[in-house]
Length: 319
Image (cartoon, rainbow, N blue to C red; front, top):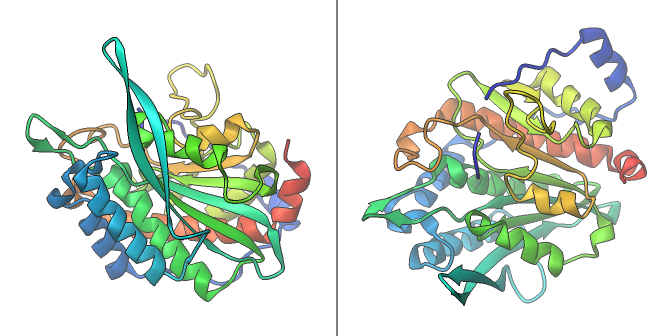
């Protein structure tokens, strides 16, 4: 994830009631397995992952864990397996060099409308090691990656109406490379994808605030986010997506959702304002706000359920 200032959005209660009145909701209270979620986060952000740099041995170890947890979470492989390799070119001085990455992709088939798809993404790579020091990237983005396993478990046990494709993307820190490889060779036609839900840095906020970014660009998504916010156990705000707003960072192009946005696929990006630890060696498991993280993941699972329940309406309003 790239960089991060604070925006407070006040939601009028009457407007919220009216907006949500016509929305199909997910009535079941959402919870996640705290111990399993935190254990996955600890594994992915451990020193032996060596910062999960794309193309590195540490990145390969992280990927092996992701594949194992996709399988255990009930996510089905797409094609010949979970791993989808790709190559990209980087500049080294006056020369160019090829690099390799691997996306890990699974799915839960929709029970009624499998041809309409929500793609849920989180990048599992980080920045590796610098001067012998490991940058563990617990929030950025072991937090989003571990959440994918919880999402897989939840919806494998409660099949959604529409197909969910769950993608742990590689090479985000090198220029959104895994996301670009995904849309260049998608596992389903791009016009089948109604929505991208991207998770990048959802694990650390002392004030219990999680942002849902994207409603400025896709205002028809706002009522669904507001419905989730009204019952969330954390504070869910919209913002950080309006270009040129003074004093507020625009996160529209800061993570993998931007690649979907470029293809006019609507997105909601969940993230936090983690200024203090971002791309620092202190972004460790021990400095995650664990209680907030567990509740944030439950909020994201709830949101995906609401999006799934309303995906036909979302598709009608998509660009």
